[in-house]
Length: 158
Image (cartoon, rainbow, N blue to C red; front, side):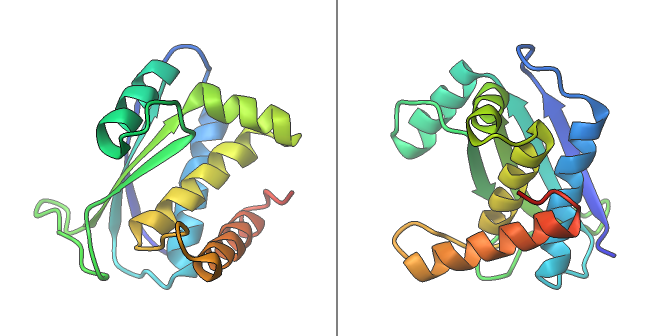
């Protein structure tokens, strides 16, 4: 089983984030890592933010001045990641989720909040591992299959 160190921060107050939701997000990240054959201890930073914060991050890092559901900030490239000298964990990067946007999407898609937040974590973890669906239909389909497989593994199917 993949060992995950998850640095978690919730800076928003609009949406309650119960322990079960945190557990689902963690499980989704681990499921993706295991599905990708990651056997090394890994570290991921997960931040839950509000709409104004997400809009500011999206504008600053992608030049898109609107709210998005999730942003990924990988620390590695080509399968190589820096190592946390204190823990020996590979530093995969940061995941930032907009809680309000995720809740709205869960409602719009007609599934649970756990599934939506877990989906966003699975999607973002694949980005941390180097996947990129933009500009490649084949890679977009591959990511979709891997996301669904990860969610199915943890019991969060559609």
